[in-house]
Image 1 (cartoon, rainbow, N blue to C red):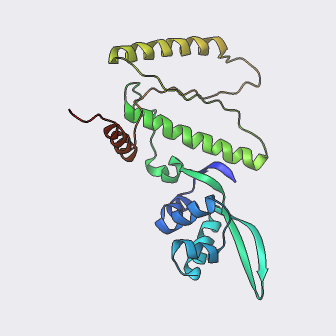
Image 2: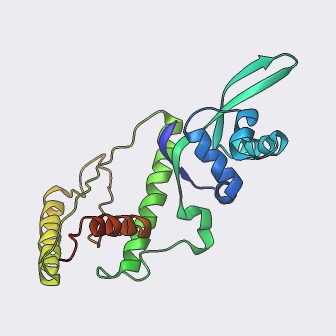
Image 3: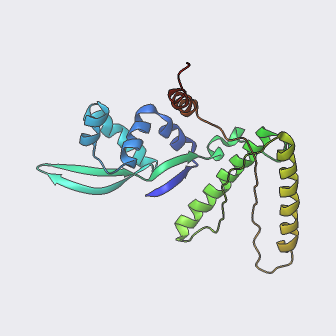
Length: 213
């Protein structure tokens, strides 16, 4: 099982977004199960669960672990092919974002287009590498910085751009025989907080407020 899998096929994406199948995927991401055991968990008839499992299996979203013989029946134990899934923009090829159309370093929508392209390209690399039995050479850095002001944020962005340009100039070699181009994506954006988490935080803060005298 992979930690993350990229769904590139439009039909597989549609299958994964069905509420019942999404629930079954979530259950199978936690461990193997059969139509019988899953039916008890999701409150649906075994035949209906088995139907959905067959469709998920056809699109590679679940995989067979083992078959157990029980009397005259064979119980098929399945598990999710990944712990979580990301849908690639290639699943919506006709309307997928193109970051080359309107490049703007200060546009949040351009940042989304760049992120979408990264998901698509890395997903294709992972698919090809898996088939070839190889690994993909990548590097990722995740950090958080708290700016005192918008001015500090702008200054940070300028210094980051200058330092990155210097590194690219140092290592970029257009004449290297056998060299391979790599994509570099840097982004700075406010950290998003899920509404439920924000409410929970506010609730905890209210709970520790001293009472008025």
